[in-house]
Image 1 (cartoon, rainbow, N blue to C red):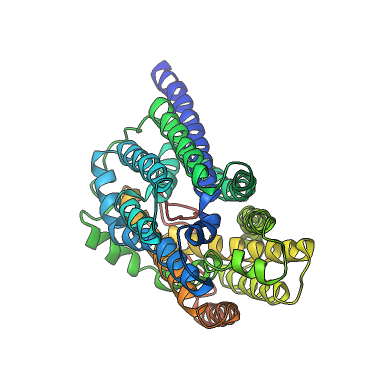
Image 2: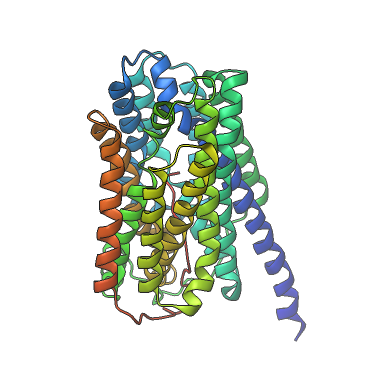
Length: 422
């Protein structure tokens, strides 16, 4: 029977080409994003914010508004993507990022950054869609690997971006660095435009509920889904609380004004590299222990490392502490996503991922704003809150998450995934 063999070859070529496009575009986009975002507090100070408290407030609001808007719209964009194709939705998001990032270079007041970040949220959401694209493009037996590569690119990009941003800030200034970020997004857009093709699959009307509400109800009926979403929210909340305050904390440690941006970039990169290691290690950990154990222990490791971060002063010691923190966060959040992702109904990846990323986006939105306002009293209050959140999430997951969970939810199930604000 030659026909099936002939059909398999282009299918294999197509999914590998799609995988390359998605992975490379995610890497470029997330690298570009983290070139400038860790420097946002310093840029806001240049725009006229008077003191650390005002800088932290505007940085927190600006970092939080994009995921806040995206969280509300993510299920909607996912539903639209299920109907019109994910490629078009990702292209829409990337073009908007090129425009908004370039516009930020012309900002004159702190509120300009806040307004542009709010506008960005209206069109964002491509990070979650790329995971859905990887899942539906790959053969079933390669699905976990495909998603894992996209996850890795979304972690390694932020590991490289802050170092580039810190170097650019010293060479050409923070304002011009926004143009570099816009260029990274333009390259990501071209990769998706030229290489990616939306796969065409026969539609199985029994594979997924017909409406977003039906999908939500189907997932709620699965064991551990809501608890996993709560864990995703808590871990993301802590993971992203450093944005508004880390450069200020580094400055308070006594580093010179000329080295604050570079040291902050190195620390952000250390945390991102650690998280990438944690993401990759999660599958092996889940092969030995339950998801409950992996999530709980990983969060406790992250909390211990964060406590150590507050006790050291040197760049190397700070970097090691944040790398261990990142590894704990990476393994914990991937395990939590695994629990939730396995419950996504087949045939509704866009909608399902819209709900899954919503909890992470809520953490992304609330965390910087809370950190910004808490730091108006003392920077230490942010770290105290983070330690409390990690302890609470670890305890709740250990006591409430079922020890045994379904290992497979049927065709089209998503494995371990990582959502991001983009």
